[in-house]
Image (cartoon, rainbow, N blue to C red; front, side, top):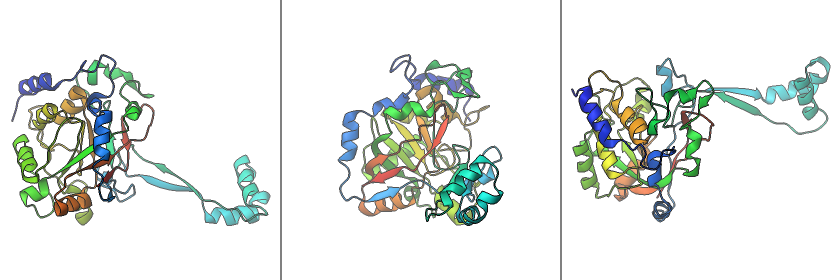
Length: 329
């Protein structure tokens, strides 16, 4: 178990504050240059498309956690409303909305359905914005933590990454096949920097500046199998932050809850890699990505690089965003 002194020493090593100027709100996404986007586009050779987003629904894994709920999908207009409004609307509806709707349905064949969704922005496949995690009253690049208020994040909101769109070269590292695991990486054996190097060598793939790294742990396949959203797993050890920093990775995503290992590894802290990546490095984390089909295809053709298109929703002031990322080979 490392100490807080060890943690602070590593934080000093990986901190990118001021690297792209005092006003920077993009962090390591700055590594994604036009040349990198062009390189990523050149990786498309067969037109195979892999959606990496999971379903946003009532049976999702967030049901296991009280502070985040699964999405609630509500119909606001449907076929039952159409029949009711067309026949009875003008007679019994007295509010302006009812009269307006009944006007759409009366004396013509036009009908429509409408709906809405209520959910945490990090309810399923998601990006963590750089404003999501902080410590000692500072966000990435030294912005004050109290700049995130009940009105949203003034600095480092998810909408600030709009200019990048998060389109780059994606690289999948398949820890499940590397370990020979049956389905997923069971708890108690964190992924270390040395193991990441082993996987890269075994797969014959390069990882470098501006890449978006996808870590296949098999947790999502296990969730689809067992339905337990709270099942523990192994993720990236907190020391992988230095490994990511040295390779100038643009962002990291995984098919589990937190990317990093649930066991802290640092005395007196929770999620130390979140703190190092989001707050110190300015490196965004993606969670609950479905990498199962992509991993199988990469194993079949031995090609672990692809174009990745993964823009978040531009929700002003949000500290995270849902998305449906796409890998194209």
